Amino acid sequence: MKLSRLLCIAVVLLTTSWSQADVIWVGGVSSDVFDEANWDLSGTAVTVIDPNVSVADNILIGPGPFTNDPIIPDVDAQQRIQLSDGFSFTLDAASITVAGNDGVGGEPGSANGPTVNVTNGSQFNPFFVVNDVKVLIDGTSSATFGGGGNPINLSIVDMQPGAVLAFLNETPDAFIAEHLGKTFVNGAAAVDGVNISIASDGAAGSVITAVPEPSSMALALFGVLGLLGLRRRK
Image 1 (cartoon, helix red, strand yellow):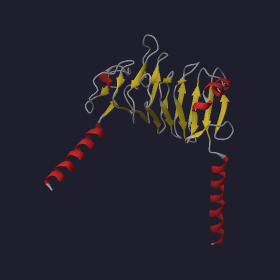
Image 2 (cartoon, rainbow, N blue to C red):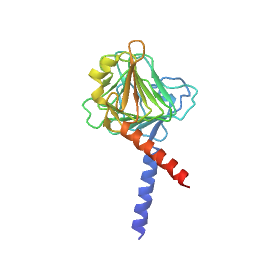
Image 3 (spheres, rainbow, N blue to C red):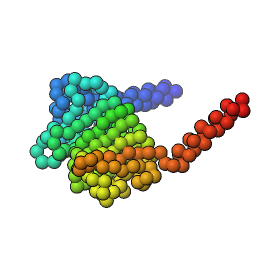
Image 4 (cartoon, helix red, strand yellow):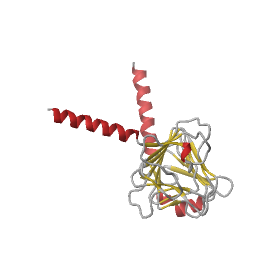
C-alpha cells in the first residue's frame, strides 16, 4: 500500500516537472533569441541557446507583451533555432521576426521533427523552416516566410480556416509549384478554390488563406436554417 502511494507521488512529481520543463521567453535584456539572458531557463535542463544547436525541450513565447519581442538575429551563413525531435515551439499571442535570412528547424535527417504552434493571434515570421518541421496555424494567426526558393524545406504547414500563410518572395505560381503539396487545412490536402484561396501580395509574394470547405459551409447553413425553422414553429 505504501509502495503504491509512493509510486503515485513519484508519478505526480515527474508529471509536474515535465509540465514545467519549458524554455520560456522573457525578453528582459534584448530581442536576441540567441542570448540566454532573454529566456527563463529555471524549469529546464537547457543551458545554451545557440544557432544550429538542438534545444531538447519545448520553447514557449507568450502571451506578451514583452519589453523586447523576440527576433532571430542576422548571424553568419544561414542558421536557425534548432529543436530536438518531438519538441514544440509555441507562439501564444506573440510574434517572432527575423533580421536576416535565418529560420527555425529540426535536426538534420529528422523523422519526427519539432512542431511550431502559432496560436491566439500570433505571427510567425521566419525566413524558412527546415528538417521535418510541422507548422500548425490556428484560425486567428499567420505565418510569413521571407525566403524564396524553398522556404518550407522538408516540412509542412497545416492551417485552420481563417489562418493566413504568406510568402514575401514566392509568387502564387511558385507557391503552387513548390509548396501546395506541403500545405494542409485541418489535415486535408490544400486545394485552391476549395479550402484555400491564393492571391498575389501585389509584389513578389503571395498570400494563402484557409477557408471552410463548401461542404462545411453548407452544413453550417443548413444548421442555421434548421434553427430558424424551429423558431418559426414555436
